[in-house]
Amino acid sequence: MSTRPMIDVAGLTKSYGSNAVLRGVDLAVAQGEIFALLGPNGAGKTTTVNVLTTLVTPDGGTARIAGVDVAAHPHRVRRLISLTGQYASVDAFQTGRENLQMMSRLAHLGARAARLRTDDLLEQFELTDAANRRAGTYSGGMRRRLDLAISLIAQPPVVFLDEPTTGLDPRSRSQMWDVVRALAANGTTILLTTQYLEEADQLADRVAVLDGGTVIATGTADDLKARVTGGRVEIVFTSPAEAHEAVAAGLGTPAVESDGLGIAIPTDDPARAISAALAEASARRLTVADIAIVRPSLDDVFFALTGHPASAAAAASGTDDIITKDEVAA
Amino acid sequence: MTTYSPALGAAGSSRPAAPAPAPVPTPAPIPPAIAVGRAFGDIGAMVARELRRTIRSVDGLVTAFAIPVAIMLVFVVVFGGAIQSDGGYIDYVVPGVLILCLGFGSASTAVGVAQDMTSGTIDRFKTLPMFGPAVLFGHVIASVLRNLASCVPVVGIALLLGYRPAADALGWVAAVGFAALVIVAFTWLACAAGLFLSVDAAASISFVFLFLPYVSSGFVPVDTMPEWLRGFAENQPFTPIIESLRALLSGQPVGASLWEALAWLVGVLVVSYLAATLAYRRRTLS
View 1 (cartoon, rainbow over the protein chains, first blue to last red):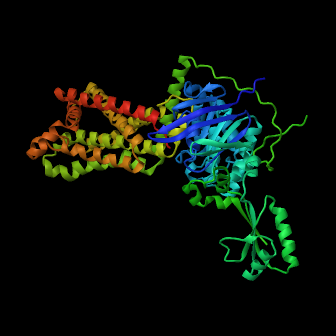
View 2 (view 1 turned 135 degrees about the vertical axis):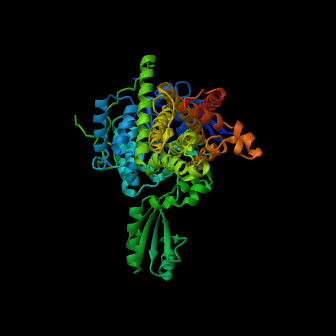
View 3 (view 1 turned 90 degrees about the horizontal axis):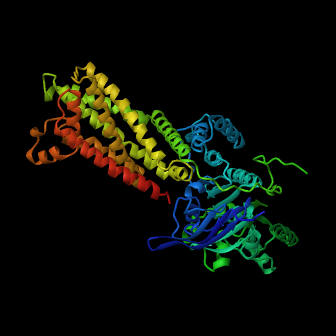
């Protein structure tokens, strides 16, 4: 059996005027694999997806889906793929069921097949109760689920998800992850883009890090994390004197932005670091007020791989903190 | 061998080992006969979508039905007596009101297209194996149906108020056909505008269609206007378009104005169609 990659990209380039968005992107994704394109805003993630989904014609290089050239045979490629964009592109004025039925017609399913598929997807995505409500009344998470359900109507072998969980609450995010895992378990090939290292880590079999329009690293999330420093545990004490004593005892270094109350302990194993620190603090009768696990962020990955931080836009957005830092009450 | 159910919502971060997936066959070309049938099906789905959008939005219903009737009533009941006290003004003004309303109603398509563009819906459609411009055809066909329907209450109420068009059956058929051409040309223009403009800017093109007809022979004869305005009024497209509809509805010979109107409409249609379909192919959200 051939092991031809489902998504095969070589030397892809695309410029808008003098702005080179893609400067030679190479990717190979196997069937059934979940592959994440990780990078800050402007790295070329969405443009790569737009080329692979026939929305944008590349200037150079080749891109093949299941062996079919994207630029030469866009109509054939469209029968192999689906795209779920950054914005839930469902019609607010149609109900969930109507949205699915319309897309079933456009996917050229017969009337009976369309009805069965619609009911099936509504149930799978836990939208049966809301099926006859207009999508405009749905929550953000429900709208994303409907959007993804719509893109799966024709059971495409390759699914593109452009920032599938941006703006979702943690519960909706983990629901979305479960859906993606179940798809891949059925043999669907998935390429997703994300700004979140955590998402790539949780979900992807392999990750490509994009910066300035090229792939600067490819590997499993563990491969990448092995090259990254920046994971740490922060222990917050009730007084600066205690923090000072902990630092003096070699527990860690003073943490920034902690008003002198916190110390930082670099580690790849937060659980072990926390228990060691708590034992030491207890032995010294230091009172711990708070503990935080700070996971390596996209910025840390970028810094490790490129020596420069991720773009200002991504660094300033502050959204990374929400999922990379798990606060633990002591 | 164990079986597993890939049920969604299953807990756990590790995936069960996937069975060897079936290889994905390369899609074969679709025979032309089937492709044509599918294209009509795609357009049908898009027309249904647009009609649903109109019927379900208060804005859409007001724009389509209440505003045309209100404009007609303003001219016939409020201004009519002052403009021509014998009540004959209604026969003069109804064609102008109809064209104004058709233009205004067609222009509202720009908003729908701009919304589809900014919501990513058009990107989604473009990645489907469907007939490319079906979305735009859907907008245009739905616009024809919506605007012709919006003429029904306008003409009905005008008849109650004393409008007496002299057209025979053939004249009515020609008038409806002409109105449909007006809607098709203006709606393709609106589609092109909607693909290039933001939602807000797209909404503002309605005002062009709302005001341009006033500076034509639609509401008062051009020779009552100041000299400097007359040149514009006589040569802008709304004058021959309204004159043609008025002649068709009143059973008069259409004369040169019909050819002038057709030249304008076909010109607008061809340029707008090419611009819209090209922009549709080129433009993406990002």
